[in-house]
Image (cartoon, rainbow, N blue to C red; front, top):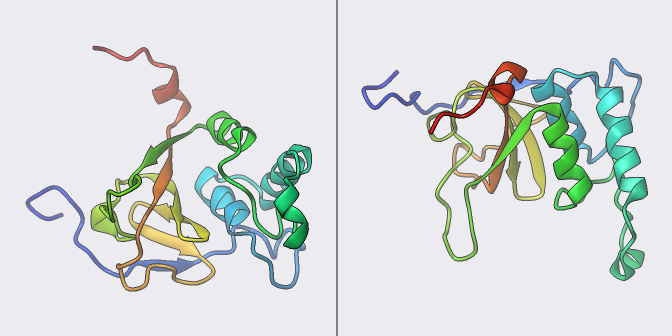
Length: 167
């Protein structure tokens, strides 16, 4: 710990597929959302994948989706959908935005700029799990600590979510 109370910067990465291979999934996929949630929520990959597949399947297809690959748990999830926010909240996660239009980058994918705990972090075109400052993913997405963080879902244990807030 530094004197400011924040962890020292550093490249901390641990290879972790979130249980994807153990669940029998093979080949490449753009499933970073499923992997990150499985890791941070400590849930089986197959369970998370099935929940995301059901959510994507229930969402209305847009007219513009015809020209590109449709969203799926394997090919990418539109995380701006209401069902996704509700799913994350039922798992015990709370969203914190770190960027807004015109604000510029205020938070990077670095241990000293993220809070401790279990996080699902949104970066450009990717989601990754960060646990107490250590990135858990199949590849290091940090760009040596320069990658901008759009926001993150932080896990809040059940006892913290159910206690009344004091004002």
